[in-house]
Image 1: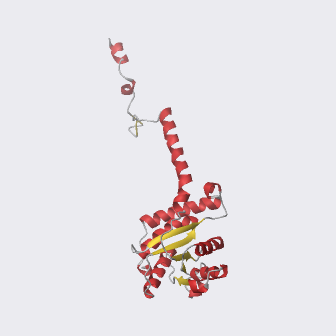
Image 2 (image 1 turned 135 degrees about the vertical axis):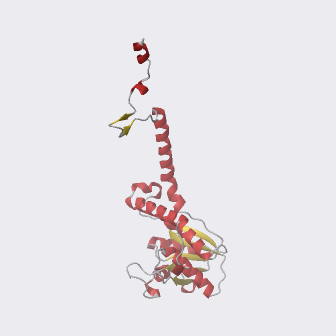
Image 3 (image 1 turned 60 degrees about the horizontal axis):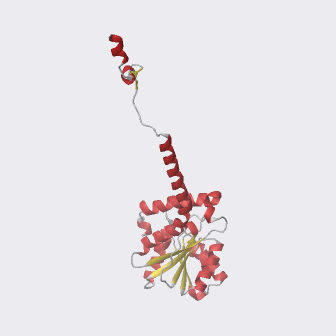
Length: 240
């Protein structure tokens, strides 16, 4: 009789719940079955594919607005400068403004001609933009976000010259475009429509950016800085 009772006790109850003088507890847990692993793996692969194919066009957005003012970020490379000239010549823009702060490596503001705005204006002039259509607007502050500082300098120039502006299109390099538009919108306010034109990098295939070290580095960097600009960026007192 005693043997039949002891044999009917479940194994989980018969095995001690603790070991090593109570240092270890035995607990029941759930784990993925083979079907669960297949579903989770498939979902992760799908999300990865969507990220790989979607993050570049999300960041490198081109969306023009109804504007007769073209703004060119002065730090962009010469391939983007050439594209900006074509943009000016093939559309209805009346003025071109270049923006940018102190040139990297100078240690801060020296004079207006040692700024990206000046460098960009000089390149545009040499590439065919008429002198009378061109205006450089340098930023004199080396701040934590140069794009926002450049946009603030442009806003202040408009105000100082009593220029009423309803919209601008900003030319920048591909992956920087969405962040550029966001920061210009923050600086210029709701009354100015901000469009953006992303010039693709000719050094790698944007459709396969993850296969290139430069593409991988730029996408990861711009994705992180865009999230920062969207969620965590608050202008400092010196840049407002």
